Amino acid sequence: MGKVISSSRWLIPGSDAERRNANFSQNWMCAVQKNWPILAFLIPLFFCSALSTQAQVAPAAYQGQFSLSAGAEGSVFQPDYAGNGIAQTSPNRLYGVGTYVDARFTRWVQIEAEGRWLHFNEYVPTGSSQGIGENSYMIGPRVPIVDYHGLEPYGKVLFGWGSGAGGWLTGRAGTFAYGGGVDYRWTRKLTIRAFDFEYQQWRVKPTLWPYGGSAGISYTIF
Image 1 (cartoon, one colour):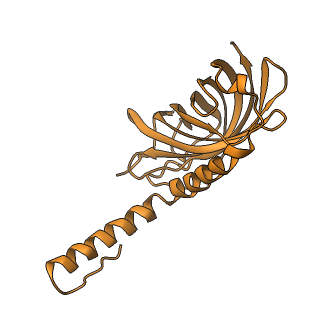
Image 2: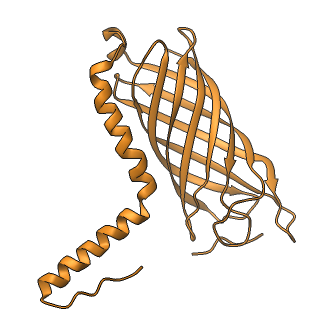
Image 3: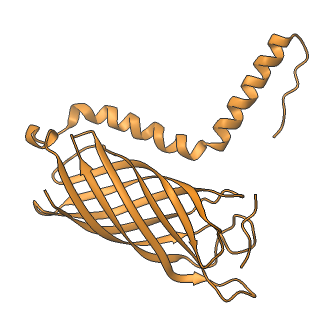
């Protein structure tokens, strides 16, 4: 199957101090350019979280009560790979299933773990007999923004690893996911995941940026 393969510079004459300042500015700008998706997600997330602190409507008993829920979901993703050894939009969207667990220690301290298997509608590159699928396993903090009449928008940053179904990726790849969504507490035990979006980063060469959405339902164990 196809392989996965591995700016301007500011030159300012003058003293060593000026050159060090120029190199610092260059490195800082490069870091911002490479990580703009992360910054674009984190800045509004923490801004909204800070603003919502004074607008919480969740009861005090809920804020300090530990709970654990487990759920299942269906997903659709753009894998960002088509078998040509470069990051590119695939002709086919991937469909699959996943499972997730939410552990709520306090109102603001929450952890989410998820596994996702995307094997349906795989794109098969020309000259290959195997399709391109993706599996991922991640865990990380989940930040609720507000709890209003059962609706809870949230943001999350997850990390873990991914594998390539179909043999297009050798071994495991480090993965990150930046996303969020909306949960709706339907009953005391059942919560509907109305929508969940993830923008993933796969640490391979070249870097892949799969993205997609999911919907599901979870059951509160305790």
